[in-house]
Image 1 (cartoon, rainbow, N blue to C red):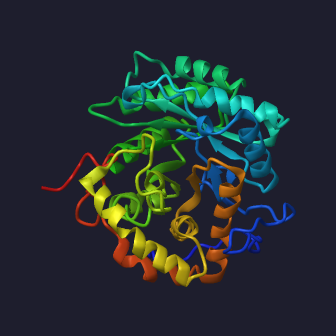
Image 2: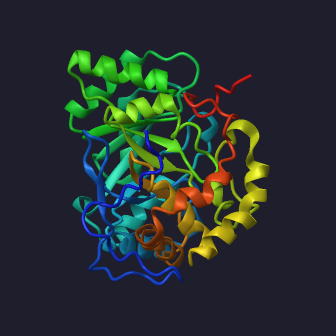
Length: 350
């Protein structure tokens, strides 16, 4: 695939706010892209939930949700974090539900993307996980589900079949994966098509200025060419790429052991961003949206002001989208470190 090609948002570019972080007018909604060839249209920006909603008061969270939806950022990725390495008894999903109710939103006002964890599957059934997760949020259905954290051996056919049953039951409409190898995902797509079942329409992958080997590698490239959509996550490396060099919270895994190199790269990230009249966070988001298969970017925000500043990424993309890749090429830090077909970095070349 030609990664030098910038994919502009559907339709005319929206007013994403100035590079100084000023908020755009609510009349200019964040644009949408289709989530893969077979998925729904989604806003190009979405809000994640891991270690996010518990960093605000209930009132602040409600204000953030309200402003996000007003800007057209109505996709929320919300999980019940209590499986595998996420066995934290976290309440972020409960807090999100409280924020939605505090903002006065109806269920039809937003898109909900949930998680199905593979750590204890099939003992922890997808049906049971869905019931618990949605009940904690305070709703009876999601729009999307992500089957996540592929580890060890997995009965891919069983996963596809169980997901299909939940879609048939009306619990959600479409699904994707995260932290799957390209090989396993290809197997899931082939099985679903052969059996006439809903296939995964997107992959939620760690993707950032520093981590590109999997999303830009040839194995996933074949899947993207076949219609798979990309949803970029962990685009700030837990805040490090945005300038929070030593986050005081748990952040994601470090495939390839490059986190210190990412931390050391921040001055260069900031220099490039300032050259474009942008913030480091805006550069990080805009870069991911230049991927030909990218339907959107998930990022965390702990205040309405931080969220609205990040909207400036769309203005940066509109002004300099065709220049960004060349400007940050040398910041690709997991090149030749993480195998391009890897399952969340577990397959590292010798």
